[in-house]
Amino acid sequence: MDSEKNLKHITVDELRSFQFAPADIFWLKKYDEVRLLRWGDVIDHGYFFKFEKFEKSLAFKGDLNFQDKNSIYSRLKKLLNEFISAKTIIERNECQERFLHLFADTLWSGEKEFGTYALIEAFASSFGVQNSKSIDQMKTLSHQVYSMTCLKAALSCSLALVLGY
Image (cartoon, rainbow, N blue to C red; front, side, top):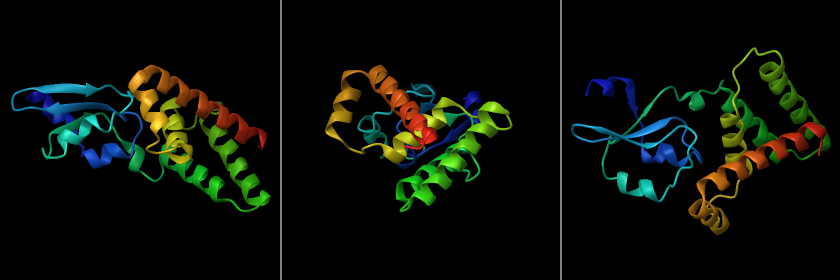
């Protein structure tokens, strides 16, 4: 497989830290590769359970800079976790100001790349209820509805944070 050179391995445990596919995810078979998820697709963690026994059978194409502590996603997630754990109004206001600066650097001045994926994933992992039956039901019924709901929730929370709530 000549295209395998462009693919990098990813483990099931690494995928568990995401609600949405951080890149195109492939299953590497002996003579072929099968795309399981496209970038941004909802990850059904139960489905990937069967791939745990096959070491190095999953791969992704592209860059996963989410583990980089300077990435927008990492900075946003750290900021949201600090906001959640803030004990005083002063600490929350400082988080709000840093949140506004992060948006200003990316959306207004264009200094750094910022996508809705990083926003949705950071909010989903920081504020989201993990292993909730209602979330599992929503994912089962429609991945599109779940994706739209997460986008609306992330944008609503962003607006609330910007407005100081």
